[in-house]
Image 1 (cartoon, rainbow, N blue to C red):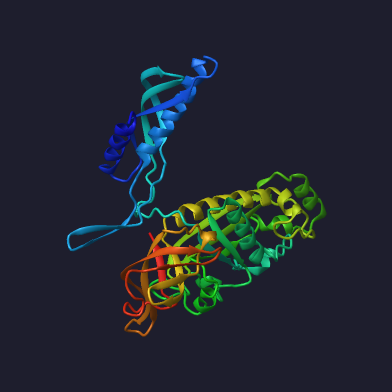
Image 2 (image 1 turned 120 degrees about the horizontal axis):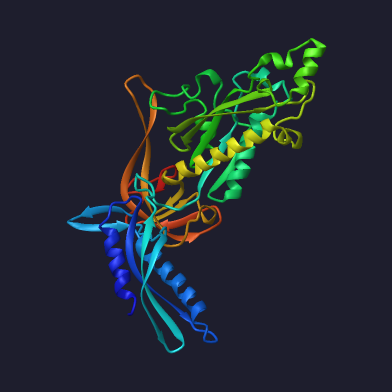
Length: 404
């Protein structure tokens, strides 16, 4: 009861605030056991406990898909998150009760703004990384980097899985673009993949990540084309010169794995020193490649890409394909691997295809207003029930369960 009131007070303050980065002033209490009459250590432990309480109070937020029916607000998916960072701690009160020290503090708690679009689900999105073809294949000759098209998505896949925020699959053998000059314009006007969508859709992932390598040339092409022995020798000795810089430029695209719509695209660029003789072939992502300044600069750029992908996809919906229906029961193609748990709730959307006046196909999602409550979870699949009947709502395999 001692710290119940400040908890409620903190939550009420937060719920009246807009969802953005801000410092909230919170009062909270912590306690610690006094061991061997060591008040100093107990005080430190009590302050840590009070700081955790303040963080939890300030960072509670309600994330839900809300629908008003017959004047009643229904909340689907309530989630509590602790995102507060505590600073400027003032001790308001300190007292010993029995063998415990109780401390009340006032502190500033910085609240993470979260996603501006209100999406707050913590499910691990599944992604497939397809091939990164070269616009000019001959640029791979220097260093023998012929494997970069398939090795680059493989390397990104490895990094994403190590971070654990996504479930990534290497699809480096699949190229989404037959004409790299038109990527990602080889789409419908609304940004949707066309001819390759069927093949890519078989991967059953939330998002498709693809790219096109635009440039891997030397900034000074004469560096590795010099036939004069003495000038070539001088160039080798002057190995830190700008003339040894090599470009690395690519475009990265993120498409929705179920509709094919383009979600994001970004251009990346770096340069590093390439000092090896033109006759030496290292291949991409080999030990020799990584020793080069160029390889190290490429690796740093890929770390930036990983960070950008995590940030971008964190604020995108989580989608699972419906694999089977039976009366009120629905099975989906996502499970423990994606973080699905019993009791989780997802909204059911019907997926349909419509045609524009110029007869181009596009995907449309319709909210059925039906909530799937998860009852059973397996590693890569889950099942649950809805309040209505799947047939009466025309819910079929291929439709989607979405968490926002």
